[in-house]
Image (cartoon, rainbow, N blue to C red; front, top):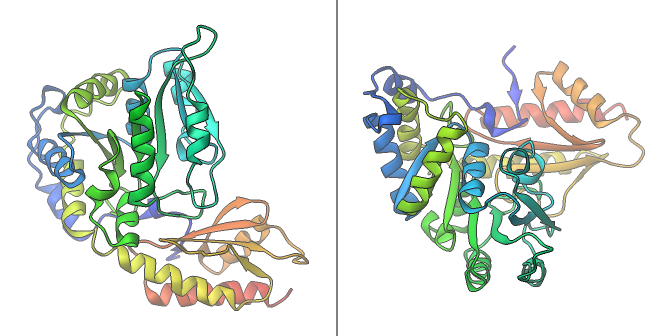
Length: 347
């Protein structure tokens, strides 16, 4: 069956151009710094982010963890949102592997942290308490509906962090979606951050990888940590080749995903029994729930949709996340809406 897979933009497949470039990629030993394709991808990525250097990593999780471990020692602390990907979905790596303590603050509905709460969370110089080293933001914010953090907000957090001697890391897995949403260059969004990780294998459709960008000194330290985490990938230029195509060809088309998310939300909003989150979609994610009185759970709904060839993400008992991406066309959106309508028609 050809699925209409709306579970995540991680299910994207590489484009024909990516496959061709991967087959012909020039490679070398990356741990020795001799893979020309990886070197080119890292240089391109740093330039796109306005940073000095880049580091190709296996995943955004590895990029975020490498950053935290570069900034924080055992017993140190970092501040982040309680709904952030780093806190919820990265297996507690900072605590498990680095002995670094997460201090979580409540994410606001738009994905932000309250500046006053960030400042209040910074520890005083007290031997009884961990030392605060870092603030971590997420843009776009997955569990807050795919919301995008503005240039102004990120700058305010950066200034606050730097005024207190802290660093700011940006989990920018979908930061290009945020740039498209605001109509700004991605460098503006990430400029206040000391480091940023962005994902190649979500909306940009490469099969594997993320890139971590920051200063030369920071990347040198992160490269050592990547090695400790088992991330030295040797002749991985075959993967980097797809990332180069992603940066060259896939960023501008993200607007199509945003447009189709709006098309999907409009159609679903007309179906009785479905309740869309206020404001959804902001970027390429549509969040919705089953209304009161619907006699089945979100999992049961997902199972019924799957019988019609539509896969959706169930994020809580009666709540869904639908993500548009490369490979989803206008006709797929209409078919997905029709599948929802058919399942809900019997309610």
